[in-house]
Amino acid sequence: MQDQAYQVFAAQQANRGINLEDVKSKLKAFRVETPSWGYADQGTRFKTFKKAGVPRDPFEKLEDAAQVHRFTGICPSVALHIPWDKVEDYVALKTHAAALGLSIGAVNPNLFQEDEYMLGSVTNSNPSIRKKATDHLLECVEIAKTLGSNVLSLWFADGTNYPGQANIRRRVQWMHECLREMYAAMTPEMRMLIEYKFYEPAFYHTDLADWGMAFNMAGKLGPQAEVLVDTGHHAMGTNIEHIVAYLLGEKRLGGFHFNSRKYGDDDLIVGSINPYELFLIFYQILDAARDSDAGVRRTAENIAYMIDQSHNIEQKIPAMIRSVMNVQTQYAKALLVNHEEVKAAQDKQDVLAAENAVRSAFELNVTPLLSAVREEMGLSPDPMTAYLQSGYGEKILARGVGGASW
Ligand code: RM4
Ligand code: MN
Ligand code: MN
Image 1 (tube, helix red, strand yellow):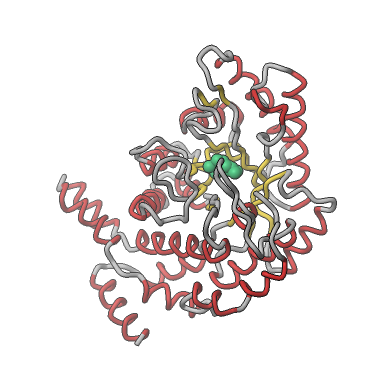
Image 2 (image 1 turned 30 degrees about the vertical axis):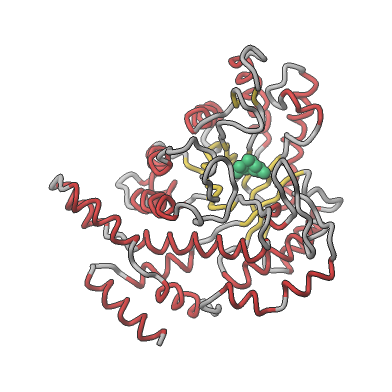
């Protein structure tokens, strides 16, 4: 049955002028990183519901992440948040990851948990608090070195709640000073990814509120600093794929945090709200991967794809698998855009044909394609069912209630 569906699909794609072998090899090479904190208990500002089976420490978070990789085959790295994932012995953590077939991905310094940071971390008017924040950033560079990670991913909760609360221009300078020190400590292989968000926890202004501010900060720091786009960090109605295209054109797009949002920074399962947006993001990236400028192509090929999600009410491992599958589905659809067809329509200034060339790829059913790719990778064609039937979800119940929060 599956084979027949695949044959029909393959014939259809040959007719559309798509090189399916190329599509399949890109799907096999695609990787997306999962976040350690997505396996922990998380909540809203009202309540964190405690679940049975939640990992109790970073070692167990990696064990859960290994399950996502085992069934999807495309998630071999895990992002850490420090100090949420602080351990005595990072070499032991790295060894544990390797034994599970994983590596440590982005190291995320956390500058929003301690009382001193209430009025800012790297932007605090108190120099000793800025020093403490900078020391933490430097500590994270060292941890990344020990873990063999080359990505430092920065998000700052810094901002103010009221007009006049602080000097906005001065705060940006302070942030720049701290980040300059961190940048100088990085090895030449390391990348600093700078994330922006327009509100929350601060409600009047955020020091890095949008892509332009992150872009400007990255530009001031140097070529190893790039912008990270978290899909949940924009005002309603923002055209995220436009931001993506612009950053690609400027060779400053470093990575993504994928998640879905309906209203705010909701951190819902990727692709659960607006899968078309995700598809259009991938369309822009794949278009840039064909650019005549080698630098743009290189940027498009070096994007760090990550999930940044929190699970308040759902089971965490299957929720992560669902997100990974949804990302893969939209990537697969975007790989089926016929760029020559789009280009021909653009050259003729045929608006309807151009829009149709893009949208029609989104409307294709890629299930036969993904099933075939997974089988060729030695995986179950249906990772979700395979996980649910594996017994892992039941086995971890023995951990009891009261695992790690965040
Ligand atoms: C923030 C931001 C960061 C993430 C934290 C947990 O809103 O998205 O990337 O590390 O949440
Ligand atoms: Mn994020
Ligand atoms: Mn967020």
